[in-house]
Image (cartoon, rainbow, N blue to C red; front, top):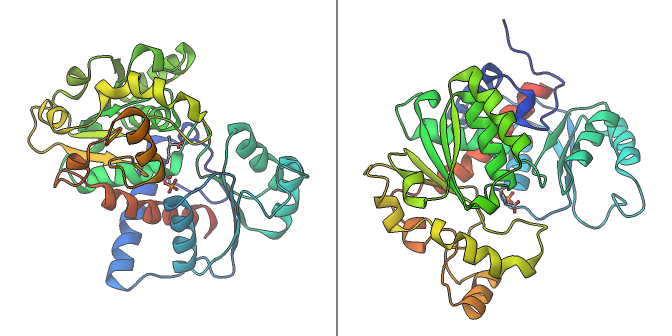
Length: 332
Ligand code: CP
Ligand code: NVA
């Protein structure tokens, strides 16, 4: 059956079939090649896209802005302040206003319910640019990058996510891996595993595709034989900064360092990270952690971050190409 995503929102990967996800990944690959060769065709001339960011962003914002610009669309950025959203106007009212002016809306914020309300009441496609629950556009970039750095098909890939097994990245990688029939091991302490209902949901998806998602408390076991190791910050945006100490204690054994890369037993394992990352003390938070807890890196060491195994900047670039595929597929 022909795949047609026109008019569709991207709120979570759960709403997409494996074929639809492959369609978006193929389109992103083609759009990347077209841009590189100088033959990209703008297919979104005259479209207007609202970009709402309740949380900070470098990649997602830039990805949407550049992708829209390349395709001839205009964007309007609304940051954490400067509009009425949340303070003096409800999401439901905002949705109905923006839906009268814009052809699509991107939303980064806290509650998944908010992005769903926007989609329900705006009448235009809404794209989830990260919520506390999920980060679907990131996963497309991750899988695109995996495809670029291995000859394996996605369903033959085995990878590990190390860190907070309950956060938005772990959850979305789990859904994505299950959808694409991949083998994912989430290396995480038992206290940072998602609730049973979520695990059952993932297992139900994986059963239909031949994928597996399992949780492993031993970091070295988690990475054994994997093609990719993926990690993310130990405390996500919006979480209480008072939890840093507790999180560092819990997640220290899951740090991606040279010893953990070697524990894969695979000399060509590649390193992925959605970014931003605390791999040195050159950020405000990194310096503060060094002062308070005596550590110079958190989820990944600078050595691994800067190593040839690290493909994080290809991954970051692919945010733009995959976001562009979403815009073209849903709006052109
Ligand atoms: N990975 C990611 O979403 O990055 P930003 O927070 O910079 O958008
Ligand atoms: N888990 C991180 C992902 C950032 C892209 C956060 O939500 O802050």
